[in-house]
Length: 107
Image (cartoon, rainbow, N blue to C red; front, side):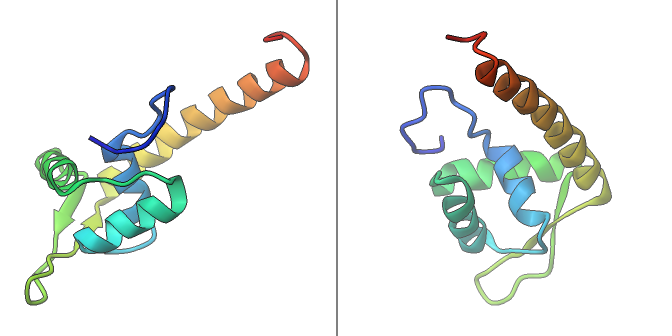
C-alpha cells in the first residue's frame, strides 16, 4: 500500500498513478518519483505494479514497448476520462468542505 502517515487515507494508488500519467508516459520509477513529489506518498513496487496491472486490465493505461529494463506506461482515452470525472467529483467535494470549514460549520 502507499506509505504515508495519512489518517484520512486519500492516497488511492490507481488515482495517483493516473494523475501522474496524465502528464505523459512514464516508467515505474518515474511514476513513484512524481507521486512522491506531488502527493507526498511513496508507492512501493508491489503496490505500483499491482495497480498498473489492474489499470491495464481495465483499459485505463497501456504499456508501451520497453526501453531496456524500463517499461513505460501511458494513460488511455478511457483512463483520462475516468481521471477527469473522479477529479471533478473530488474538486466539488473539496470546495464544499472548505466552504463549510470557513463558514464555521465544522467547528
